[in-house]
Image (cartoon, rainbow, N blue to C red; front, top):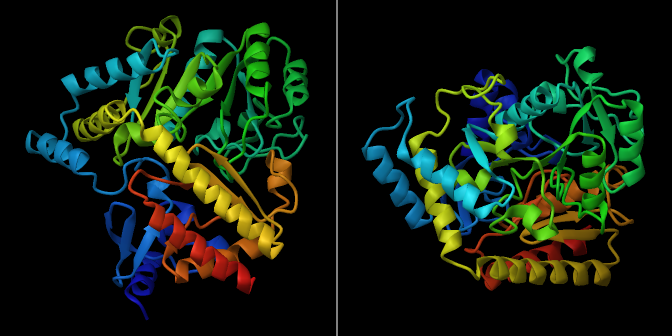
Length: 426
């Protein structure tokens, strides 16, 4: 039995499912998860000493790869001054000022501890600001595990919202309407279903939690217009895309101005973090300046702020970083697409910047309904073949892959070489 297998066995006795976040269990791919002990650049090593090229990058925040020296040094320096104070610090102010300077829609920022917390708070703020109860989300979009957004009605079933988890009351689900991403008419129907009652529409501008799905031309603009026409706030979930697609996030790439935005991942440099921001007149409704309550002892933790500031400054000081990431991801996309064509594999590659997903689907994936048509068993077989060759991909068909600036052309060639071998065995 390997060390990872022994660790997983121990974990199953004291941690539900043996993991602290479900996808880590590798259940959908039928594997025992490797327990990671070290990361450096584009690579990670497990407890048995096996080396992998990492295309997960801690689910997005490691845009410069593992253990970036400037980020590590910033955390070390901050830690020497104290780990946590539960009090105001200058680093929090610097982070808020920096986010406001980079993101045009951000008039004010509130720091929290996770993407889930950021979304939960933004939804509460939208309801408090508008005095309305209902929200609209999109099937297949994941916004963390708070009750209001852990709802997925499936394709077109907006009138029968069903929770995706036990423990969430039906009364909570009733206030969440579900539309279909890239389907403007489904959003119109949701607004017509509850006229004058919708507080907000929340969406990933580029969904990455049913795999990467690109917004079709004009869709995001249509959602923005519908929100304005119906007096609802547009809440952009940029926990994954924020500062990964550009210094102003996906909203900068697509020219969208949301009312509220949620961030995470990159602004913590790999440490736990979240934030929500928006127009001043809305954000000022948050306590203590307003009546919408939100609080957190570890919000703006000095270590997370130090890591995040170091990483954002690195992005600012490397103006070619996004072009480099896009070029690398384009090279990967082209290589995989050529292999798919050569082997006749029913698969497609979706990519936006340095985010990508290889879907085992015979049809283009444009939303939740088409994503569900993927052959998950074929993906599981491919994933195992890649993992055995030292390529660490997201252990689910419905997740994104990530590139960092630490990934070299040789790293990507190695992935393509391994994919060639894997496709030949499928």
